[in-house]
Image (cartoon, rainbow, N blue to C red; front, side, top):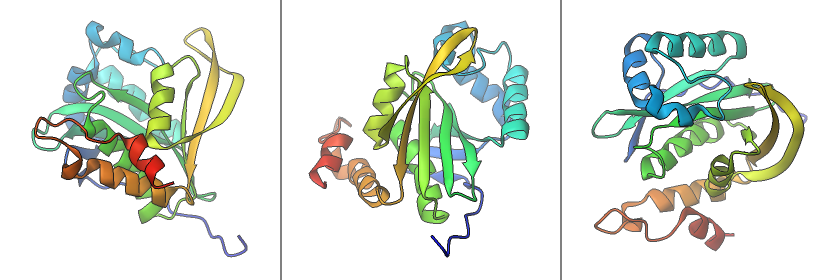
Length: 223
């Protein structure tokens, strides 16, 4: 590591994949569509494990995301359908440490229309690929409440490895949070990237759009 000089901060441009568009948040144009996808009483469960929310208006959502960007350096991206352009969710680069080549994906909030879809998988792939391939990062993190079983399953499915539990890590919304830590590192990335690419390939889906092989199966076959 004697020659290590750090990395640039992420600056993921608007990216269109087969299933999803990933766009940097534009507070002015995205406030309404993002709130329509993720806000309102019917979507309150989406915010159960997020440090803030649910919100009562588009303006409140943008105020919170803007404050997170200013105070914590978050870079929020909006997920949309590749063809429809419909706003479907969001996630943020967080805990960005360019000097160490490390960043985290967090505040992942996916509408019900995006959950368990190829678009959701492709969105995380796009964010990981930017750090590793474009910028030469060494580490990409995923953290969640240890009680959030769905988030832990997602982390493992995407190829993150469990690194343990930080007990009594935070107090969130008036309750204790034990934090589950996951990460992938640069030497993991080539195999993880190849699995993402093979899973997203049109040949992996039948005419009805159902997967033929799971992401985990593809990754394990290449181990």
